[in-house]
Image (cartoon, rainbow, N blue to C red; front, side):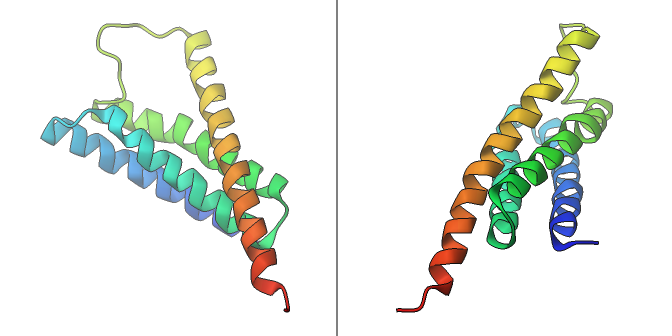
Amino acid sequence: MSRVAQITAIGAAGIIGFDVLASFTSRNLGIPYSYGVLGSWLIYAMVGFSIGRIAPVAYATAGAANVALAEATIGWWLSWIIGPGRPKSVTLTPTQIAVTVVTAVAVGGIIGAIAGAIGRWRAKAATRVP
């Protein structure tokens, strides 16, 4: 398995674990589940930055987008089962679910691209010889 694939897999596992933790925290402590979005964005950024240090920005974008896909599918499903990920007063249509997943993947990709560009820049800056 390539290093990029390893970082992406670790990020996907991490975000799913984070979703479960955020769901239980929200349900048991009454903290709004939506606060977890900041942690999700941080994970996308860490994945993008890490990949950007070793690979082109396009790889960082794809890696973070894949992590976001894991969150928007498996993570959301687990949150739905635990409770906080399930809207209480709204019935979601398949189209609304698809739009939510696509939006999450796009946001993850954008964050991954920005963080990947920073990681790429930092990697190049660190290897410069004066």
